Image 1 (cartoon, rainbow, N blue to C red):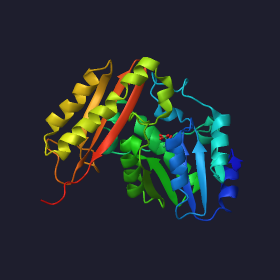
Image 2 (image 1 turned 120 degrees about the vertical axis):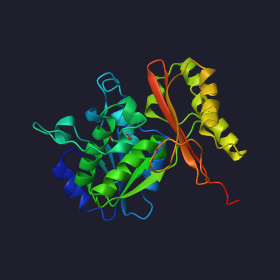
Image 3 (image 1 turned 60 degrees about the vertical axis):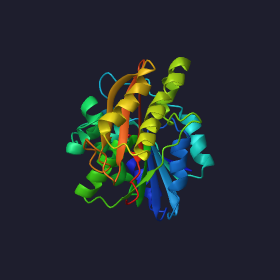
Length: 281
Ligand code: PAF
């Protein structure tokens, strides 16, 4: 695997790679990331990854300084997966002295995560745009776990005519349902046991939808009830249109996406589940 640390090194390596699938990450790689690396080979000649803990997407009181950075283990996993190139820049390479441009995506970036974490999606969009310009992938892969991030990036790619196809990989879960996340390592044993309530709540609401319930107030309260059995503090519970993420009063036959953010101690977890379209009645 070629490890490229500068823009020039990436461009030289990229020129030899043919049709390229790309998985941008912040490292602390888990099986969810690795499933994206495997998927990214589909229809491509080579796979590139990036590892960059992007400071501009963290708020002042968030976990930038303690974000896990097990770089040797990450490199070994990427090598074992046969990834052809890793872009591993420092902050100075991505944001050199004098850097002063931000990408601002509109409404979809300001609700849910965007409302609780002001500036987060501007940081994500800015760095993803830069990574696309540097790596020049044909296809880029993102995880469904960060559903709003996928929608923000789709909006940016559409609006700016970026020549990259966006693909989304399914959320991977622990046996008990907890979504894989680099932040799960922060959880104490007690919080880890309780955190499965996110998935239990989503699954309860999904079962109610499958049983005919479409009122989002009812579905939301099923999720809230599960969280309330634990010490989790809810930031939001959303049942929204799958494309625009606008809140719904009732789930239409076309389905919806349920998402939530819950804090356990100092650890903030997000998860989501898609309510599948109802078969035509
Ligand atoms: O999902 C992530 O890991 C990050 O938000 C991303 C897309 C790599 C941008 O920093």
